[in-house]
Length: 338
Ligand code: MEV
Image (cartoon, rainbow, N blue to C red; front, side, top):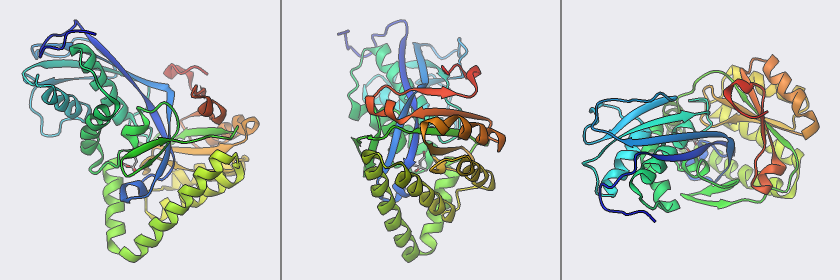
């Protein structure tokens, strides 16, 4: 183990985190239901942190930022910067300044957890730089500090899923591994439209507050669907899980976070033989997730692209069970193995 004195740093530190997809429970999880999510290791984020005197970003990645004492003040610091500055404070080295360069394979603002993954990779890189031990709870907590900035009111599902080893059931701030007894495929389709999580979360909160009794009914129904979906995933009941996803999509439509483009992609996936499909993440753009038999995945993927998806990725659920996720991409130029 390396020396842990306040400002002893290596020349550089590195850290990694991955994308996530929410299978069921986005938005309602902010209001107390569980949610089911899975990490996507084939869509990674890598961060490199170096000590600096604050003179600027030397290297180029997807983006870079300065954090700490000599970093320029900004009215709206990014989630990753907030997470890193909170880490420096907690470690008692807030007099330090670091340069963080982030290499991100996750499309930004598409519901795949890019903000949480970038924060997770950045905090891990800075911990590595200063030789700090990070237990999972401390890391989650720091990423959540950044997520509160990115989401307005973050449930913690993204922070948990981008740091998880496999699929999780998340409830009230606690993530537990969930069994996957299914060999099917999940096709993720990018609408090509950036959605603002903060706006979507605020819109949903307003809508629920406007009619508390209807909100209670909707949240109770959501919780039932999430439990049914978790059971179906464990028991290998593909049709039941697909039907549950579709019902959840209807509910997300009622919450106002679906769009005509998302509805078109959902319909295209179903017409091509998917068992179910729904938006994943905050909506208002972002990505659609379709559940299909593995042999139908290529035609579902093609149908989604014909209906306007800008790129698709396919995840085998059998890989989720083994903890070694396999993912193939329709657009290998992003550097994802196909
Ligand atoms: C975003 O990926 C998931 C939301 O439920 C927000 C959150 O849980 O923090 C929309």
